[in-house]
Image (cartoon, rainbow over all chains, first blue to last red; front, side, top):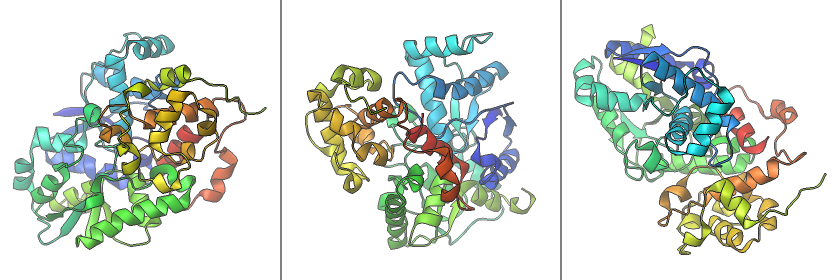
Length: 262
Length: 130
């Protein structure tokens, strides 16, 4: 199985390990991620404004390239996934947006939302399967109590993202079980970490991230996992309560016994 | 240049795609908002005030900068009014005007620390700057 892979800005720099472990683990699972050429930053947040066109074109370019290569487009960062999947939905269902985007870009072949956007976790669940992952685990993380932090962007809005039950998701808990660890449920697992507010109102970001980590600590998690570099930053740096925060791909690589060869 | 606040309900509804008249005033949007205490006008007030055309106070509010874009109110609105889309449209109506950027590139260096991901900067620019 091969995907056109969109890493995004932060996975090439501050969150390099999120991507490197993902690519290495995918190989073990028989999945190839081929990075799309000359991808551009998704912008980090999707604007819900109907007349906001230009800021969404980088997503359309990535989507059209995946279509041209004949693959689904794979994302890993929660923010990229949210932006690109929602832009794809606009290209499918919003005629005004689709026409304007195609007119702007004047591509050889117009893009109409043909590509599918697949998050790495969806690939693990729907293509590889958690039972299959379990069989490939050589180093089960037995005894580790892990809190799955979903945040906002993978889940909401549920009717577009169709990732999991937006209020009671279980994909990350199933993932945690597959790698031999124990999932810990906590109330704040799908509430906001503070996001970009760290640059506008640091206190609000601290309040939000502390609420999330406190909730995980109360439920006796040893660590948190996330798919989002900004969530990780807020939960590690802005939270006043401290708990290790790890990318889920790092634990996958550890369980598959390939952590050192990333 | 000063902020032009002569923006009507129709314009905000067109930009946002929101129909404020669908609201049944249950208040769930404000109840679920994680930035509620940092807002001077709350999500349910955005819906009511846009419907009435009382948009100027919203354009000058702190709320348009403190919305986290977490989509909690969008997800949980039982009538699909989706108030965050109004907050976004009003913020756009402000930053699209000359001289109304809320965050400037020159401010960034002093905000940086060694761990801050690029994602934070691009996201903040998307929200606060044209």
